[in-house]
Length: 257
Image 1 (tube, rainbow, N blue to C red):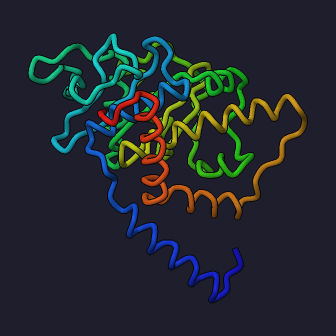
Image 2 (image 1 turned 90 degrees about the horizontal axis):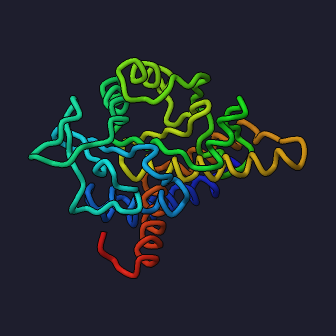
Image 3 (image 1 turned 90 degrees about the vertical axis):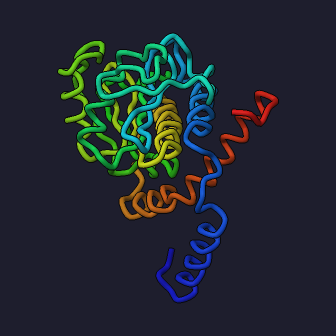
């Protein structure tokens, strides 16, 4: 965009409109969690019991689906809260042992309020190639400069050693490709983490498809940075996730989360 008075005024007006309409997300944490898990399932992220999705609540505890439940079964009324030692609160059901490394991330990253770790097909396939996710399209540009890469799979991540490794590799990134494994995204809100996971898988699928056709062209740095800024504003994420959540609700024939 040209840096002119007209373009600056258009940008300010757009920002004001976004803020007025989408500053507040119309879902509480439990509702958002349930709808976000169902959205991930609809997008191919639910593969048996592989992967975990968690959120940190205002009391410093964590929220997830009960172990043995798929993401498509997430329900606001049956979610389980647990503590740093993976103990369910108030006599709740067992949680997935794999969330132990999530606790490590939460401890290292006070800014993180939600974590998505899933094994969707395109991201898993890309994780087999020893190639990182690249910025090859506008859709992928929203992740530009924020994607980490873990080049070694240590095995099933249910111990402290894996937690230290994965949280250390993530560093300050907002998403990561785990070699021979899957994807990981974090967010300061739950909808932000889910948003990144959805776009990550879309970008991985596009990269794999394009790789089979011919040489790949990276998005130029300035364009990628501009796209990332535009597409990762909280208001833009709220607008996008509101639409995707309504889509999930329509597919179930009910507005109830």
